[in-house]
Structures are given as structure tokens and as C-alpha cells.
Length: 474
Image (cartoon, rainbow, N blue to C red; front, side, top):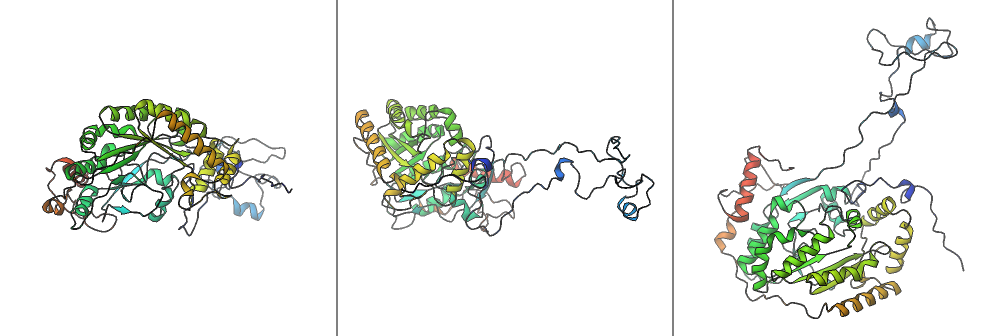
């Protein structure tokens, strides 16, 4: 039988050409996105070692082939600039065997590129509710208050959505974020429409609603306030312990059977978590959040997602055991997905962090995906196919049965919904600085910054921007 050759030369996709990992970031580069028509690559032409421009000529330099400093050769005379106008920055040069001066090679003292910082841009969303009819997703309505996610999970299936903004799914996805500043008001308007039928809304289906910038923008908390006001059922998916900050609202929603929180836990190894999910909460903090939510009466499930062969697959049973001990009542899992540009990003990440097993991981993923890196088909895309997928399914089934997980799923109550008042739906909730427009080109509406809750906070924030006290990129 012919044997497949898995060897590869140094170049794109090989450990020898892998970019260096960046501290605190998941992606190691800004990968080219699928809508990009041109590409720019930095190339070192060799002149950087002297720290001087490529066309610089030392006025004291003498061609070794010439007779000496008094040479009257025409080429030498034309190539030597006026020494009165060009200062000699070199120390006294060494003298060669022929008496010629030689340009010394200086060390490169240029500063290395600065790691990208997180920037946040405000956006006015036209609508907040997004609907899907995927048969393998347990909800059909979702809300995402942010575009991009600072957690930096290298495997995130939502990374390709940044391509629609003309940005890279790589470092741009985790550093150039967009906050939907009118998220609460836009959702309020949609819930106020006649004929609206409530269905559990998932918050954080694409990007994490409790990523670090939520501490400042508080859009997710504003959405929870609206959900409690209208008694609307919802589910939350997050991997940040910041969710425990809103324990007061979540407990009130749980009393009316209106909320379930799902905590995503990929590994219990803190070192692995810093590599996989550099700016998400540490695993022990997520377990503490599960415990706090459970003690307050909020139902919590845990998602072992995604499972990556030879990276975190051996942790499945341990994660389920610790989650059950913390109070989780439900568990699920998914297998790594690599849609669009995520394939390249993940391969670069593997070569940068795990060059010893990179090819082994990729080939096992192909075993789970019928020979491909990604399977977009409903049903199989979440769990994989083949013998290795069956093995994961058996391990998960046995573990959950022993731990008593998944014995029942909480049914959320959709009959308590009360449409928000029409007057409140028409009121804008933040102040528009003079002449400022959202990225969509629509001017921001205005409201008094004295308003309370999420409306007042956003109003005061935008008022500070107008006064120059706060930048959209702070």
C-alpha cells in the first residue's frame, strides 16, 4: 500500500516559518482575510543592520581600488558628497591593507514592533436580534452587544465575521473591537413591535458578552435589566467569571425561570488556558463563578468546548467532575471547528506553541472531519464523524451518567413576557456629541444624561467623549 508523505519544506504552514507568539494574544499574526484583494509583506533588504538609509554614503569612504584619498578618478569624485554638508557619524574607521577606509557595520538599534493594543469603536446598530434555523443549535434568536472578542481564543469560530468589516480575523479580531452603543435601546424597540413572539434569546452566541470591555461599557448588564423589566427568557454563554457581577439580576430572573447560564471550560490547566484563551478568566475562576451562580439559585450548565485532539481532549472527564462539584446541572461538548481563515490561524498557533505535535493534531482533526480540516454540514460539524468521534461520544456519555449530569433540562417560561412601553421604546438613551456620527453614517440620537440605568451610563459616556474627556479608543 502506498504511504502518504507528511513531510513538508520550510515555508508557510511549517514550524520553521511560524510567527513568534505574542504575550496576551491568541493569534500570532493578522492573517489575510477572504475579501482582501491585496497583501503587504515586510521584507528586510539587509540595510537595517547599519541603521542608515540605503542610499547613504560615508563621506570618508575611499574605494580600495583607488590610489588613496587624493584619487582623481571621475567615479569616485562623483560618488563622494561634500564633506562640509554631511557630518561623519562614524568613529575613526579601521585602516585596511591598502590604506582604504571601511564603513563599519553598526548593530540594529531600532525598536521592535509594539504589541497591538485593544481599541474600541462605538457603533449604532440598526437591530440586535439575529435569527438562525440551524438544526444543531438549541436556540433560534441571539443578541451580541460586541463585535470581536478580546479573549483571543485562537479556535473561535466567530473570527471570520471580522472579514465583513474589512478587518483581519487574526489579531484585529481581538484588538479592534466594536461596541454596539445603542444595544439596549435597539433591542427594546424590537421587543416593542406588534406581533413579536418571545423565544429564549441567547446572549453571546458569537462573541463573549462578558469579555473584558464589558467592565466599562456594561452593555450586557443593560440587556439583563431589559430582560428583567420585560420578563423575557434568555440564555448566556460565556467563559468569563465577570458574569458573577450581575448576580443580582440573574438571581431575579432565575426566580421566574427566565435564565440559564452556560460556562465554557476548555481546560483546567492554567498554563494551557493562557495559551488557548489568553484574556479569558482562569479555569478556577470560572468554576468559582459556577459555584456562586448555583448558590444564588441560577441554573448553570458547562460546555467542554471545543475539544482539540492531543491538546485538551484528555481533560474532558476532569472538567465534568469539577463542574459537577461546583453545582453544574447540565453539560455538553463540541469538537474543534476550523471555518474559513481559522484554519490558517490555528495552524500558525500550533506551529508557534506546539511544533512537536502540530502535524499530529491536524491529521487527527482530518480523521474527525472525513479527511478535511473543516466540516460545515449540520449535525456532524459539532461532534465529528468516524471512530474517534464515537470514542469521544462514549467517554462523554459515561462521564455524565456517572456524575448525574443531563438528567433534565430546565424549560424557560415564555408566558411571562410583557412588551416594553411604546414611549420608552422611542426614547434614545445616549447624548449625541455635535457632528458625531456612528460608523453606519447615522447621527446618534440624544437623551438627557441624567437618565438612570444603562441609558444614563451610556449618555454620560458619550457626553464625556464630546467634552474631550474620553476617547472612543480608550
